[in-house]
Image 1 (tube, rainbow, N blue to C red):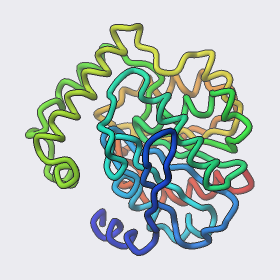
Image 2: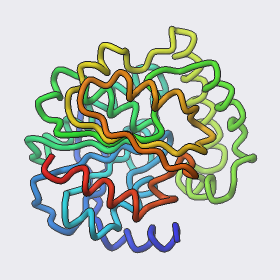
Image 3: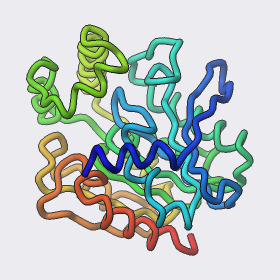
Amino acid sequence: MLTKNFFRSLSSFVSKTEHINGVDLLYHRTKTHENRDHGVLCLPGAVGTGSRDFGPQLASEQLAESVNLVAVDPRGYGGSRPPARNFSPGMYAQDARDGLELMKRLGFERFSVMGWSDGANTALLLASSQEAMSFIRSIVLWGGNAFVSKEDLDYCEKTRDISLWSSRMKDPLIEIYGRDGLQIMWSQWIDTFIRIYEEGGEICSKEKLNSIRCPTLLLHGAKDSLLPDFHPVYLKQHLGGQCTYHVFPNGKHNIHFQYASEFNAMVVEFLKNK
């Protein structure tokens, strides 16, 4: 099902580049209703790309009929290279600035944001920034964390050696970065998480979370082996606006793949009239 959805998506979107904040960013935009005014910026996970991480959403006719998806390759990932990724505690804030500028460049006066994993972290910083608040209609988050805990580091270290990953997880990324390139990038990402933890652990402060007043759809897979349950609970407690929270009892980290039809329908219903 995953492969079928992904290849269906290849005919469902167009890929273009924009020069944003000094770099060329590749983005993937749904073809259907390309001029629809409700844009949705899709932010992928660590070392991910827009087309790979949001294949089932870019392929969704239901989403395409409702909104205009823009799935970006963050700077240093996928087709947005060069430059090489600058793995540092400031990378999420840089991705947030890039995402805002891209959507402005594409002509969206207001837009929603969907963020998965690292992309959810970026979405939090984007929605809480003073510059972006007037642009953000709503946000959809899953797999993200506002802070780094010791437990998170323990989870991460178990994944450091990519030879232990499943072929389904690593092979598409090896095609993009090469085996050695992926190993280096993943280790750099883990080292950045360690640095964030050593510097206090904060990604998005309570004050910033509370300043997010737009409607939020917060989703979580109860069997997510990469994200402890206390992270979505913390977000639900501290987000300042109306928050709709839903847990997939058997869901893992990639609920938007695992339950693509249900996930997409939930997003469409949430974004309606937002």
